[in-house]
Length: 397
Image (cartoon, rainbow, N blue to C red; front, side, top):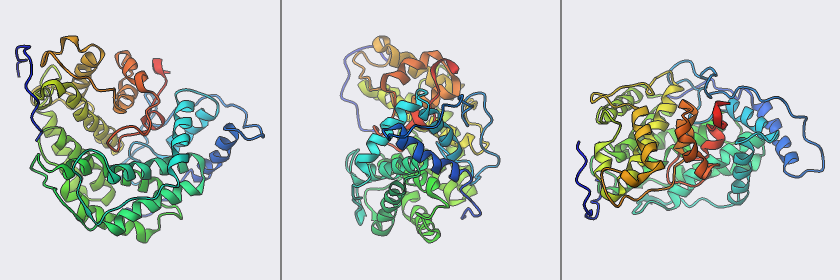
């Protein structure tokens, strides 16, 4: 695809099996950290003596925490062991973990007493609303429980999940193959937040086995069929959610199909890394490129925890995830010569830059990570709190 002449743009058109036997290994360790964080944040008692930082599970130079595909122990963007180590580092004022933890705890203190707002028939006309808020709340509160051990956060997270499971029985404006169905897009972006939360709560007293079964039925029967299958950022979001949901459901065939769709979408990326469907969006092309890569990168992180390597995949046109991220980074850093529009609109860097930097330790990404670090609750997808869950110090240390 050749860049157009840089002339004033027209307004951009609308884009169109049960896992068993899991135990909370490391929970005693994680729960104990709750006391440590209370102490750090103002108790008159002294916190434990600082320890030398250790390797962070999932960071460069450390072994992957996964073994087999669809492993119940591998987590999604976070796992209990990795969070425990990051919490320990935060307790000793190591950055970026100390700032990320303080940000999470400040948010959680405001969010823990908010009541969920489920609806019986889910229709989403914009990009915000109760479903977006509550998927994020469930995940953030489950993260907070995991690193503090304070039960009120786990209770609130489980309560939020089950409020939607027990209330929402149908959807409206969901059509996976049509870009006019906004509900499909927003579910695709955000429903994974409920799975991220349930994964952290699994095996605890707060999400009973019967509740998990109801959640799985709800995800399988009501949420999964809505995921977008388009060949643009909508489809990237849908693919991300299908990877997460089919994994949680133990649906190996569905998981493999979602991985196949991810590769199919990567086949459309140009050899220089630009994504034709997204750069064609006029002034918004830079933002939509970042939006597409949010889901491509997050899906690669999750697949990697299942021993499926998407990071190094080279598509049919010669594009790859690294080339696409590098292309975006170049123009996010200086959009003055963006070749697809002379009035490009740059969005703030998204939370996915933490994942990209943790993977490649590319110095070119550091200013984009730093611009909004710590990456916390802000966003409109399930990909949030990535400084805490995935961030690493600058310089590859």
